[in-house]
Image (cartoon, rainbow, N blue to C red):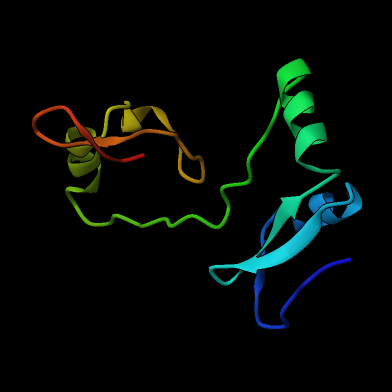
Length: 103
């Protein structure tokens, strides 16, 4: 059973979650899985195998312009120049003192 809203956005993994038996809820405008077989079963599955978390609902931003690459190279911790157009890269944005603004 799903608790859904017609105007909510489906993540790229939405159908996978539904097919896997997830209970779907609206969260920040997205249809997200909140639970599968139960908290205990999920805990044990992660302890014994692996767990994945769908981050499709999290924010993204686009940087453009003549100095976009230089800006990203300076403000993130990965080598952004190594990726091709259309690819993604996990990185973080540190404060000048080394703390992390966000990842």
